Image (cartoon, rainbow, N blue to C red):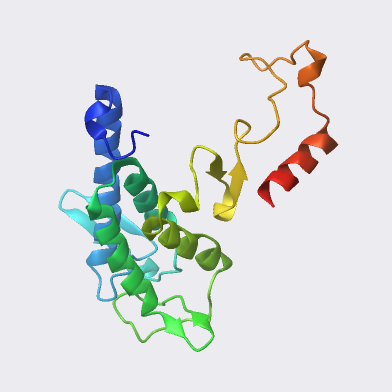
Length: 193
């Protein structure tokens, strides 16, 4: 396993990783520059940097930045991603209410809370925070991909299924590789249970 060994990466991959790091850094700075450490829904850029969209200062507990930190951590093992994640976890924890967590009307006014917790907060944001701090064995990214709402889905390689198409997307002629839709669904359900 080469995770964390960026010295073995090809130059193009390293360049892409540096771009991903800079994008993640920009995202976390959208969080860290507010009173609550939570990002506003919309931030614009101009020649001087980040500019708040005053009509969109709310936060609805979105997962995308935490997801990026999780994937960058898994790729590089650079502690900075867990450090940033810890600060976001602290910020999210301050939105706790008696019955869950709340979105904010304004990220610079912590007492302006909404009576609203989107379902994706638990399904994605909290799941990605868990995965960011948990051992890699909790979810093998070579055997699973994360779909909508961070649902883990087994890869074809990790399941007992074989892909019924060739590299160009055409149905293979070998009948031993054919899988019916019902059989594929049953196999996927059994492998993810």
